[in-house]
Image (cartoon, helix red, strand yellow):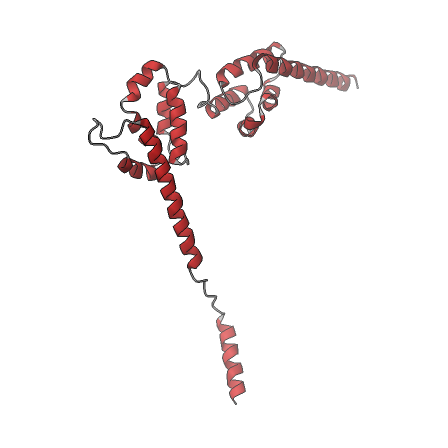
Length: 232
């Protein structure tokens, strides 16, 4: 009985420690809104560790400091994570694009090389533009001349060929436009073309005749017998 009582008291102490840590985290860093995950994690770990909160409770409690717009993403990251190392690695990867302190040339190149992003050309443009603008100034200068080429490498293969045609410019060194606004316009044009083609495919599908349902052979034989009987 005494052991059960002591266990209950420890649970209450742990709950109180978590509540105090969460209150302090929100007070110091605010709610996590998806931006600057590295900086936010530092504050989160510091407050949790000061109160000896277990790794399991730290992982489970993170969604409580997340803003509504990112809670679903946080919960998806939490699933199946049993150690803080696993969770920290996954949460950093999930919010790397929004992390001002971690966008480096290496991070951008790794994202560019990622296959099958399952994003429209316009979505890739927005993500690429956001990451590029957060690179250190020296990296931006180094990559600026081939910015359009790196963007084309980032889009899925099905979009790359069409966009490559839209962005050709023989007057430029690498044969592609360097006007970044023109790249955005080309992405919008490609998206409209895709929507138009999808609309045509849907219209054609609707005009196709319904599939003829064939009757079983036995039904056909029975029908013939009935017709013969009527004729007799």
